[in-house]
Image 1 (cartoon, rainbow, N blue to C red):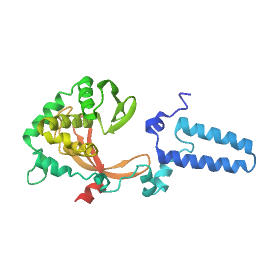
Image 2: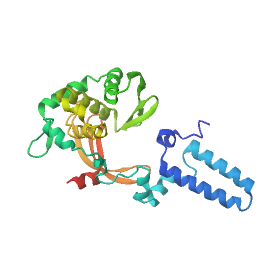
Image 3: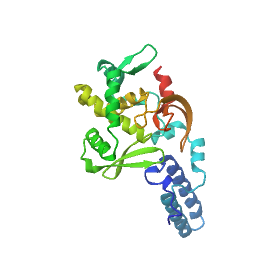
Image 4: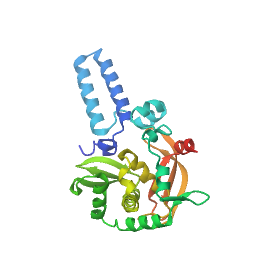
Length: 262
């Protein structure tokens, strides 16, 4: 059974568009067989659905088919496509908050972290040198008991679980540490941080992370650039920040979102 299962395509890694396509094909196949023999159609359907359950796919090459033939508007139903500006659903201006709090400054060419805040951030980041320290800050950020929080590395990404269920996924452990450090630094920097809406906190932490110049794990320089990313269901260009020393991905966003904001 272990050889049959494909954990990279099931469980938390299951792709809903691909699953939907395979279920539709399985139903169609069973429907055709039912015209000849209803009992056999029942067996075919059972085998097909079982295959999709344990393997993720029925038809080989499903990701390629889904990527090629499903339009963005269909993928958007499953959260696979974010329309430019979609993250602005919460009426909260992240940049204005960071600016009036003195977290960021305009250096003439770009918006960067204020030197004093950057020092506070780095101090907080380097203190997160153990899983226990990370758990303590994560539980404070998520407002849950520490014993309910756990972490799982999945390839290069980093997942945070509460009570065993995936609550969120970050580009890397370094990205998660950066958000925890930003939360700790903001908590000490301004009393207004507690009043930031929960739905906007993630975007605020991401904004701080996007301004980093030093990796919070190895202190290596961060390189900003664009690249093409191929996911399960689509291919798209992203703006990404990556540590040149440890190769950790610190930040990644759809290039269309950046273009829409300019």
